[in-house]
Length: 215
Image 1 (tube, rainbow, N blue to C red):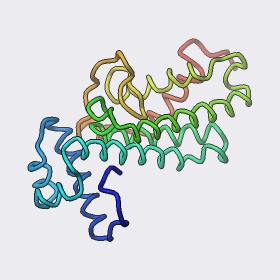
Image 2 (cartoon, helix red, strand yellow; image 1 turned 30 degrees about the vertical axis):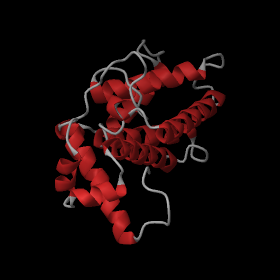
Image 3 (tube, one colour; image 1 turned 90 degrees about the horizontal axis):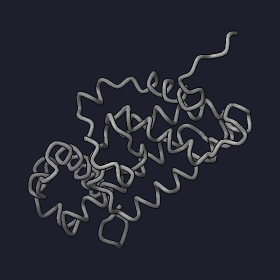
């Protein structure tokens, strides 16, 4: 989290930071140009409190990007990609990612794409995704000669399509050249059935849309 370095925050200060970040996501998702004052009001704290934790608006957005990226990493970890049966892990991780992406659309969108610490988290998530796809490939579900990096990109695009109606990274900002995907609204998030959509995404990645062999 991009805040002033020093001693660890006290519990009440940590709660204040979490409240500010949660409020920032809500406010900026609706009004990307919102000010620090508007975010402070939504968080129920003073403007001084926000500035004490974040030097400026960009520092707040960077911290928001790191917070959301960390939540994605936790969502992936909850799928136990290294120990669970790989197909189970992929499904659970996908459902978790859909939930996080729906809740943190601004922080994981183009407007918050400049944070280098967040980018490093996304790179690690991508690496782990390829490793999980490799485990699935070893089971013969993915063709032995398939390019796993390409499979990962297709997988990311499907998650982006579910959330935004256009391809975007599920674990970070839109890919270069994909312009601006709309932030999911609260109504969109509420309408998601992450488990059902995860099953559909995984099925499409692994089996495509062609006719299935009889039997």
